[in-house]
Length: 146
Ligand SMILES: CC[C@H](C(=O)O)C(=O)SCCNC(=O)CCNC(=O)[C@H](O)C(C)(C)COP(=O)(O)OP(=O)(O)OC[C@H]1O[C@@H](n2cnc3c(N)ncnc32)[C@H](O)[C@@H]1OP(=O)(O)O
Ligand SMILES: [Co+2]
Image (cartoon, rainbow, N blue to C red; front, side, top):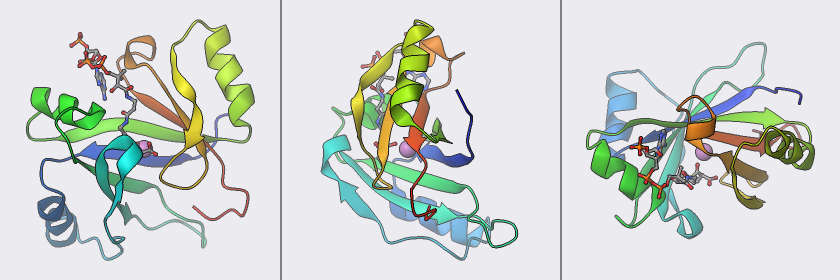
């Protein structure tokens, strides 16, 4: 398995607009995308772009507010009402080879690879098989656009 760049850190929040204000006013973020709803994951999401180096894209903070309490993020917020770090997403060159790799190690891949918020194929690996860390694996965007 070839580990690629850290694409984003998923951060859950009970109030997306308050979190955007926090990243702008407390963290000095200047590049925050327009929120949109991803029905399939029952989340309203936006990205805080952090500066990259030498013209490359920086790692993003993916801010996630559930649109329903009966959702992965909704359920997680019930246990973590303030919100916080929810998952980590790494890029890989070949999503299908990566899926076979984790399954070969007996780790639970959650569902089939599907198109994620960045428009490329992703899957998640169960946190209990990953040292407590919910891990999203994402195929590196072909056009290099992140
Ligand atoms: C913008 C969209 C973007 C995309 O899809 O492109 C996203 O990133 S969407 C993000 C939301 N979607 C997901 O997280 C999908 C993957 N997650 C799941 O399938 C579930 O959340 C799952 C299976 C990890 C847990 O669901 P379950 O129904 O089993 O919930 P439980 O509360 O019973 O959890 C079981 C056990 O796991 C612990 N847990 C749950 N979530 C996390 C987490 N994010 N990080 C670490 N650990 C987590 C939970 O505490 C339970 O452990 P226990 O010791 O029993 O308390
Ligand atoms: Co994500």
